[in-house]
Image (cartoon, rainbow, N blue to C red; front, top):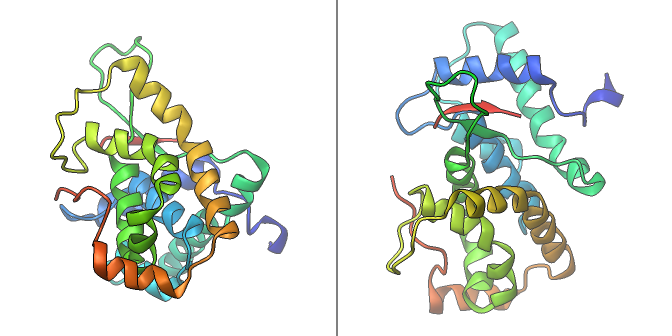
Length: 220
């Protein structure tokens, strides 16, 4: 069992977790794609939180019984704990939403809306640690640019600028860049850990990220 702990849940286990989250989700609650984006932001960020900090952001109701609780918590822990090893081995893939398509024979179309929403919530949970650095380091903002572009295009972030919608090829290209973007950010924070000055810069500059506005079926 210990050897499997850092192995991401397989497709059937993801379906099981997806069903649970959908059955208990309110309008503002994250589904599986959002949970994966949320946990990704926490895993690659400057100060990874403990489970007691992030679990309340995902789970909002008591479990039906002890068995259900143990199962859901195990799947969430495995989903979380697999992110860093996947990045290190180049096997990380975001869990994306699949848009409804009336043509059953057409290839699936994916959306990053839920994943980006969760990712932004992960940054929000560690806002004091991110904002000072984001406000003055253009390198970090550039690393996040594919994710920010997707989030603006999908309506997760508001923007004062006049951003033209991403074309289909540009959208797909940004999707393909998510793994390298999150890997680069993870390496950035390892090489440039938090400093006291980040917090004073945060107080001076505020948030550099676009404000977040308040999807689809996931696939892996």
